[in-house]
Length: 55
Image (cartoon, rainbow, N blue to C red):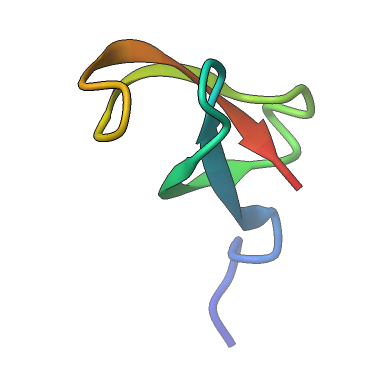
C-alpha cells in the first residue's frame, strides 16, 4: 500500500460570484485543515475570481 496517501483528499472549487463548480484539486487535510481559496479563471464570469473549496 502507498505510504502517506491517507491525508490527501480531492476537493471541489466553486466560484465565489456565480457559484459554479469549475475545478477539482487535491489538498493535504493534515497540513491545511481550513477551506482552500485560490484565484482562478471562471468560464461563466469570464474573469479571474477567487474560488473557494466546497463540500
